[in-house]
Image (cartoon, rainbow, N blue to C red; front, side, top):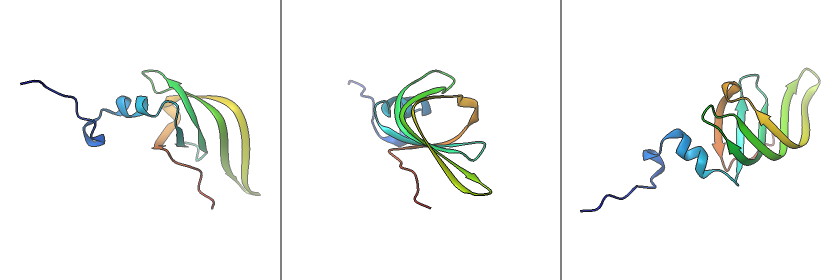
Length: 91
């Protein structure tokens, strides 16, 4: 009997799921309440991430500030949540 690796997302390890997102859009919520959407280019074992075609959104007292960036390197220890295929909410 041969064993096969299941592609059911519920059986994937977290880094395997992040690896499947390379080349795709990903929505990231940071600890400082910034939200970032971009195309994942790569990551390391600490989930430091390199993204391109980035939109960064931050709530300020004056309202929501949106910044467009070509590339960004995120420190994995500041990431709260990753949403594969996610886009920035309109609110």
